[in-house]
Length: 306
Ligand SMILES: Nc1nc2c(c(CN[C@H]3C=C[C@H](O)[C@@H]3O)cn2[C@@H]2O[C@H](COP(=O)(O)O)[C@@H](O)[C@H]2O)c(=O)[nH]1
Image 1: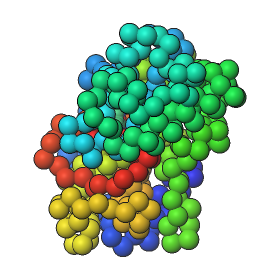
Image 2: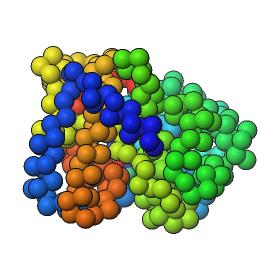
Image 3: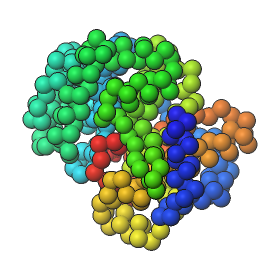
């Protein structure tokens, strides 16, 4: 994921609306003495897991729709994860490619047991169709085959996903430079690694190449910690829940600076305390803090990427 790391650093070095405060990173690292609290994958107990290829199918479909919950104030990621889990428990064929290619908006709502239209529902449906079609065309209908063809490399798997599934191409253009963030592709790798505990479909020799997943929760936590500093216009927009335009400088800076800041934090902890911490470990810690703090205001961008 060198492209993610390098382009995030490029943005951070030219950023005008968002600043990464390195001295605050040092303070946080000092305060926790390099001990990032360990958060278990599925600490919430909401994900499907049966140690089989069906779990891989579940995680891929989950991450194909793992974006933009906030427009419905009652909807969270938990509803998607547990809704798909229940659907699979009821019908093991619910995520087969012939079903994926044919779901309509109302059927998806019914599948997830959600009483009203989902945010950007037509995009969620389109992405399900895309996943169903391409899994069938190139991977015998199974996300497990996609994972197998990556040969235990996280970087190869991300490359395969972004090559075959346009909906995962989380890129932006910033000051004429292409920026790669790949939030949902990376989180899928991390979900495999977490669910299968680094074995079987979750074994990746280069898991340390993954960065954090630039969503809307982690930046809010980094801001609360004082690590991200926003300019006054951006601060006002976020605190008043105004929407931030997708692809705007502000939006790209928020996401890229979050990736960069956590890479710096990880480097510092590993160097100072002789650890081999992964960005995923820091991500899950920060994310779990963020979702438990209802008072945090986060940036609001209508996006299919996060
Ligand atoms: N950086 C980061 N972002 C994450 C996750 C996860 C879930 N990961 C699972 C993996 C292991 C755990 O057991 C978790 O359950 C979701 N998100 C993002 O959060 C947002 C949803 O927020 P809210 O509207 O409040 O539900 C949305 O952008 C969603 O894409 C993560 O881990 N890291």
